Length: 382
Image (cartoon, rainbow, N blue to C red; front, side):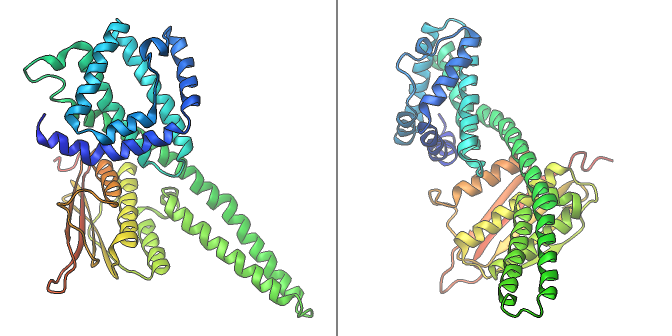
């Protein structure tokens, strides 16, 4: 297998997927029971397909402890054994897909505020399915270019489809929550604050309650600000009220006020009609980049630039003057967030370019620069 495949395995699959498996291990009994019910509807039995049972923690250890060639070979050998126990390929594929669906549902419930484990599981499912099926059909034993040699690139294609689906579900739920916060909680809090201010006027002759009312008003005002901040974080419901560019400006303003990090928003020409998928992607990418600034960069200044090229490509650039990092080193704590950003961009056919220069006494111009290029549908057509 080419070296690039091994690098992809180490950087984008191994540790993120192992973390997802360890989360699933906490609910093994429930997952297997639900899977068995799914298999019964297909006329299959999990003990026939996998007599030794499923141990998510063991699989996670195997994933972390083996290089890609060993991992690949073990799955292909298992695929051979699976072919001996189940002589119908469509049944084996259906069983694997049902297990993925059950695991995905459990993982979504266990990590309700994190999309990354779901994306990691989708990536692992795509790769495992291809390797198992190559072993099942015997293609991996051939000496020519076969399904195995193309497995990671095909897994990437499948993953992009799964990633887009998962992202759409998450965004729909985020939008619903954002709308509920705005329409219900936000409005109610504003009314409570109004009533409290009226009570202050009524209680002017009772100085004993004035401090408590003032404190209550301050608490409600803080709650209103928190609801607004959560609405900005959740998006994209605010696009309906503000529009894309005003929503970006509002988020940048609140981020700067909350973190004391100066953020300069530079806006070039942006087409009026931008697909919602692109609006959401750029908004989330900006959030992710600014989150990395807080957690890792120690930056004091950030520049966010938005523009387009000939109505064909949307361009967003986020630059900071932080400590930077070595992009050539083994992926570190921030790599998971960067990988998720790359996945989101690639799912829309775009590209992401990351440059970073470490801070040093003798160097100037340190910091990180992230450029996102998203092609627009029909862009460049005459």
